[in-house]
Length: 96
Image (cartoon, rainbow, N blue to C red; front, side):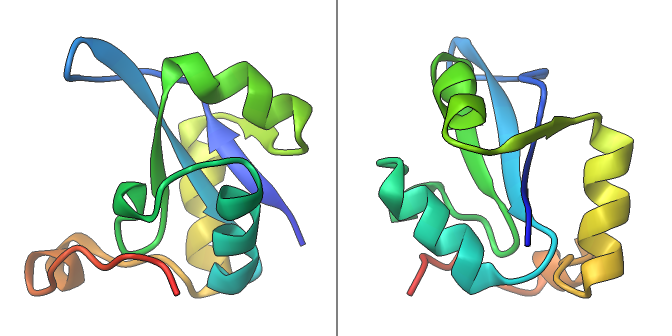
């Protein structure tokens, strides 16, 4: 049971963004996000997009910092990853 976060490298809306994922369950991910004030609108099928300003606080709260390759590898191994093909056929879904 681990919540992972990559470094804020993804530019959008005048900031850099990280991805927050779980390597065991979407429920765990939603719970961690809720406990840390991440809004459900930030959920994108298998991850939360979080702004750079939240990175350090999320790490302090227990998110494990990893590189993007490890994040994607562990997300895929968990069976929770939504592929690009699957993503293009679905709408953004909020959490529970």
